Image (tube, rainbow, N blue to C red):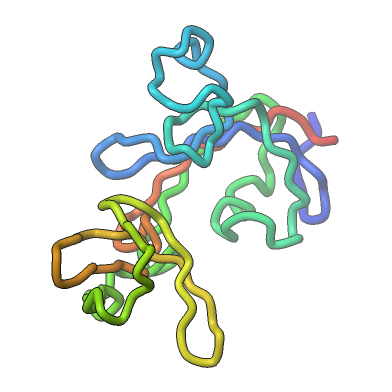
Length: 166
């Protein structure tokens, strides 16, 4: 039976979980997605974090499209085979950094900005650099933003199933 090798294009199913079992990414369509009980938007976008997705992912091995640890796990796999790989936080989205949490007085923010906790925004810093933040606290005097990646500080475990070598 054929085995995946560097340079192959492969079709995989991928389920990413945190240590507590929370699914943060999945290419597997679940029954929950069919009956709208999953709690995500109508399109069941994987970006919504609900675990729903539209199907397998096509990946070119060696092209850097996914974490290198996942690519390494795929090498030598045969269609139908499943492997699990855990990626330490430092090798995934980095450790959580308290220095990436900043509180800005409302007087320094646009008057029409009405942020809500959990909202994701793109702020413009010095030299017109853009960076994504999540609003973590809002009060009358200030707004606190967190620019850590939402998965920073988390070890990520992926269950990878090779569907086919295309």
